[in-house]
Image (cartoon, rainbow, N blue to C red; front, side):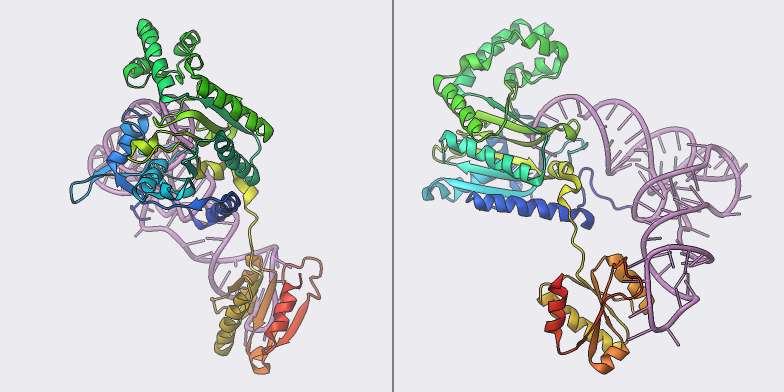
Amino acid sequence: MTNLKNLRGMIDLLPAQIKGWQKVESIALEHFNRAGLQEIRTPIIEQTELFSRGIGENTDVVGKEMYNFDDRGGRSCTLRPEGTASVARSIVQHGLLNNGPQRLWYRGPMFRYERPQAGRQRQFHQIGVEFVGIASVMSDAEVISIAWDFLKDIGLNDLTLELNTLGSNEDRNGFKKDLKDWLNKRFDMLDEDSQKRIDVNPLRILDSKNNSTKELLCEAPSLSDFLSKESKTRFDYLRKLLDNLKIPYKINSKLVRGLDYYSDTAFEITSEHLGSQATVCGGGRYDGLISELGGPKAPSIGWAIGMERLIMLAGDKILNLKYPDVYVIHRGEKAEQLALNITCQLRSANLAVELDYSGSSFSKQFKRADKSRAKWAIVIGEDEVSRDQLLMKKLRDNENSEGREEYIFSRNDIDQLIRKLNDK
RNA sequence: GCGGGCGUCGCCAAGUGGUUAAGGCAGCGGCUUGUGGCGCCGCUAUUCGGGGGUUCGAAUCCCCUCGCUCGCCCCA
């Protein structure tokens, strides 16, 4: 055993698990293609400033969870903790909005320096969608429905869509001021965490898990009283659109979300089967981010799904493993060459073929062929080579242990063999 | 960042201070030199995540460190 190990929270995805990932990714791609989205890929390292400005200096993500380092030129760099800021930067930098609104998706690793636990790693993977430059409430509903339909299609059932509106920045600022005053008057009754947050990020206190604070907050001013008419109308309309789409949701007025750039629509999709990290998808509207990063005014909305959590929920449902169609057994030098040729020819015909490399006895090779769960074996030995023939034999045939199906083909008649293989 | 549990072969594990570290699965070889799924036989950890210490003696006790896991904070 080597003493080289993975870094904490950085996990390997081993071959046995990858099938599930590929399946999920291919289903996602289908959904995105149908919705007419385009993929964007951005670097996993950015200037630190992008995140501190984009996500917000006072958020937990920026304050204590980023992987920062100085490169050899002394620039402060950060491994991206999320995807939206990078996508926004890229859009601004390349002027993509000159071509009209952007409807994009992305995927890739994200990094957050946190203590790992179930459903949380330091390197994890997100797949996300961003609609940039679209203000219409329709886009809110559409973006949510893309996530919802995708998760349904993966086979996830007991999911909850939690929905809230954060109002416009002005709405929130007014509310923040009132809330702060109200909280300061009751400073001694708050838990320690919340006391620290009053000036830094009072909204997050609403989300407190501390019981006495929770109780106290029942009396607190409510954001809904500060919502502008526009924000209210927008939220009501979104609800109506979701009702029409038959997407069930639960209003959660405590849902604040940890990134500063959100405004108006905020949502999470949660599951009870994830342990304490219940959120599988999180997103919301970020109307100010693009201009904050030096771009034009471009109202936007998006979400991100945590792949690891999604895979955990999906479990074996998505697996349906693919076994080889054919296992090629051979013995002798000439047979070996022929076996390799046949293998490649069959693969060109779109068949999944496994070739034995062991050089051991036929008996052993047959055992391995069985283990591979292939449907057919092709046997090439000295006899076959001298007669220019191929023997094809049915595997995994439990019923007839005596007369198992066998076919002999001429070496020059591969097409016929392929036809037989495709028969069933 | 804080607090619990854990770490013995590729996997699942027994062993809790006395000397050869059970067992099962998988793997490899044989019974069966060209024919399979069963069965039987054999092989596979100089070593117990890593380092240091206590001891005549440590996988077993102590310290440090790395990793995993669960909870808090927060998020995907």
